[in-house]
Image 1 (cartoon, rainbow, N blue to C red):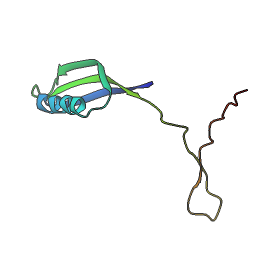
Image 2: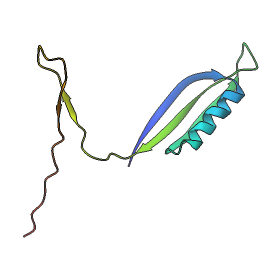
Image 3: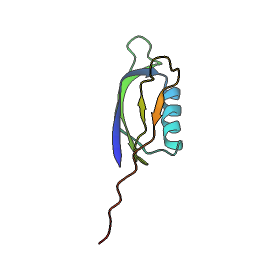
Image 4: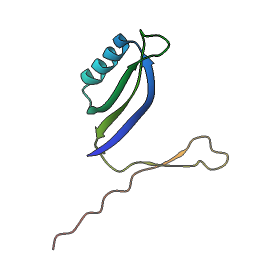
Length: 92
């Protein structure tokens, strides 16, 4: 399992928008974890909020990644190289 941090340095919006965003994250059925969140009223408009958050996403790789090579000159499509199969160990 792998984990990746998504660091949102600055956001602003209404409380209603924040609640809908957080509810959407929770109901999406993906492995996301909000570990840090800072919220403060906007100094200009107190009906808006400002803040930052760090969201962590957990994921698993299903297989080797496909390598895309640069196309040769004159070719319009990129060349796609299939993944190399894993080595099989022989039993003695």
